[in-house]
Length: 388
Image 1: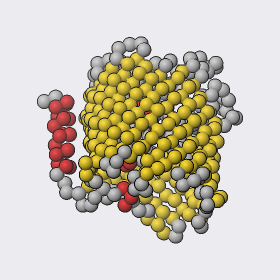
Image 2: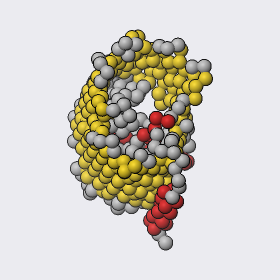
Image 3: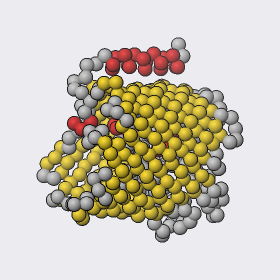
Image 4: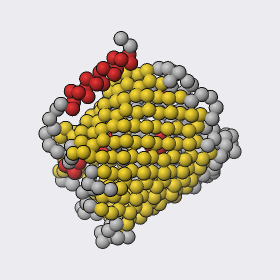
């Protein structure tokens, strides 16, 4: 019996077992509640997954900005932590613990709060991080309550990108190349000022070290700048949103060359059961004269179709596309090569309890480099996301 048939049989068995479980309650993401004592609150998330993935017999050219390869399990394979790229034709059938997240917040009165989001992982169990990491850490102060004017200082998440920051809220088990390659702006370290124009429109302004490469080792003295326009409409239970984020920042070293880009997405509830997700993003990183390279443009897009046949079940169809137009600017190479990438996923989600979500996903990737043969990656995974 081949490893492929063993993996397929295992996945099918686990899917049949989990789908026979009777959910304790209905789908209720708003059932998440912080543990609060004396202004201190805490909540967390745990991700677990099991899957199978196979690479075609062609040279692998996709290594994203976070060192991950493509496919449904590409974020947790060895390349993410130790740079070991899988061999052409290699297969994987393994269980993974992507990471555990612990979010802690302390309030100081009604207008100030301190927050830290910690990630915990284990390299030998396929975690996306090696051990422990402070992912977000910031102080937020409300200056004006009427217009919700707030100042945030530290490392924070941005609104750019359709896929949510916590995997618990992501429809699929895997993340797209838009997220993994940081083609849309990522999590910066700096300062943010936000405020409500009205109940539907909010503006955000950022000044940070960088929006693609969040590091103090770039040797630059010029900060990066970004702003976000967020417009919401619809019901309070399932609001729709349009989010636009342009940015410019010194991410490659020194004060030049600058990276610049814009990301726009919508999460649009067309009905109580159907959500349309669309994202388009563009980024340009000019050539670095000190290290060589070429002016490189990145174009990417995402389509996410989410349908809920019942409050406890959903299905999702996702397609993602990315195009890197040259070999990189000599410092940053966000997808791994001059190439086009196609990612196609079909999945489902089932709420076993208010804060326990079971997911399944099948994914097929095609990577078409400008030099060399095209590659494909096929795989399927099941996962459990727990919020506590």
